[in-house]
Image (cartoon, rainbow, N blue to C red; front, side):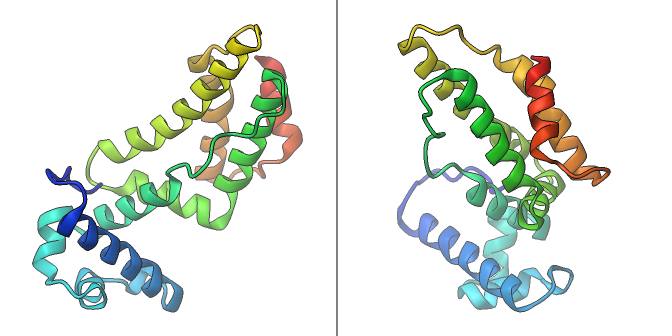
Length: 180
């Protein structure tokens, strides 16, 4: 994961954006096993030392790019009830994360050298579940036990995605939800 930058915006943000853009462009043209820090630096227009100083190594660059791609761009769907909000969220989460791109993002996050990348990824899920709880509270519904949702639904989904030992079908996700 990218080392925390002191200044947000400005040159630091532009460099990060260019490095992220370069990674995306290069991965669209070549296999990730051929990707190197010097290639990324050349495409981004920065010296390789900038990447090594800011990120450390290639795995951390890829983890940072994955985190940026995983960052939520919208609130979870509001279906009008907590039960259906949660089911909709979990089905979308499972579909996105079990895709080839989603699986690779999970692997990139986990292969980064720092512990903060997986933590940030986990926080995105917690934030979505907290949003569902806030909606439920405003409607007078019972609240989710967020750790129970993580342990009983999200964790098994991620496990099976990472180890590719089963397809993550909607019925499997619904069965996990029913056990809550």
